[in-house]
Image (tube, rainbow, N blue to C red; front, top):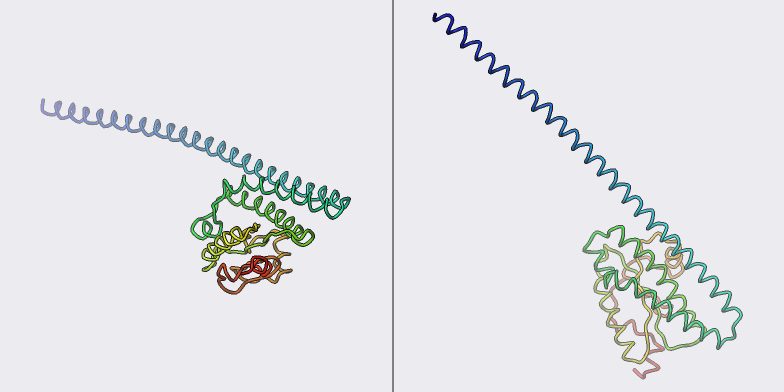
Length: 250
């Protein structure tokens, strides 16, 4: 009798163990299936996300190419037209073109940080930021060239220039502040200033050529009415063009 009870007890234990094992096994199988399904869903999500990001990047690149192509064609057409004009007519047309380019720059001024050199020193630029900056740089150079041409050919009362900065430059933020002060001084003197920040590390060929032409080798560096200031921080009063101070008796 005792032996039969012992056999039944062992049989019950074995049955329970088998039952628990089956449950654990099924739970493992179901977990694996669920995990595999989740993995597939995540993979599909990643693929879709990657596709969307790629489409966005390609779209941005196409937009950038269209922008550059349009910008170049406009410059070529304007130059062809200018060659047909008299001196007075050319100066009038340059003024109209310059005004239109400044309007186009408003798009970038509303989206880019107020001071690029300060932003890049304290933040890691995103791809969107870099794309906008490249477009802005091209448009800025074009605007500066028109302002320079007006100054050289038409003798208008304007201060034009470029400001070369770099993200690792210790004095560039302070130099940017001094340029803001210079802009106010120029405005108070009854003139206007066309000045654009340029990343000295830009790979754009036009930037590299300008650096070579003006001998720009360090930052901060400022070009004002074709005069180069570099090697240290320059105060606003040091940057005031001679023709502006002479004209206003200062």
